[in-house]
Length: 198
Image (cartoon, rainbow, N blue to C red):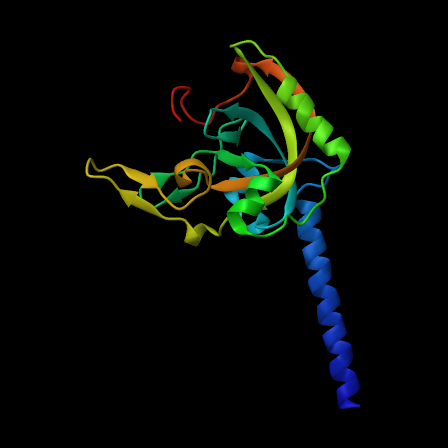
């Protein structure tokens, strides 16, 4: 009788664990539901760690990096020691993730996924416009306690153990696909940081 009761409790615990994990995945923005914002993730970075999420933001790129940037000022900015992290999420390809970690991504890109990314790359925008889109992919992040910063000789604090270029991003998205692409005036988005900063 005792063994039967323990097995029943074990099955209930496993079921409860699965339901909680499913709720977190649904909360993390599904492929068809309302996407998260960069600010949502910044407020609770550990909550979305290693989840497949959809997140909306505007795209900023340079030769060495690309990022998804918040479209509004984040009220709950991530701070480590004296450093304040920018509301930017590094974006990388599945191929780069595999080279970086030695692990395969936990999703399959379809031809439709790749076609959407190619359409994004072909977009031509004016100097005073930005592209706002919803990206879907694997989110890499840390719990708040795991972030670190160092103090420079001039007294400034700089984030050091994040993701992307120079480890300066608080999160990284391994991009599966993109959807709901729009081109808007740069004046329509709140940068969350000064226009001339990184």
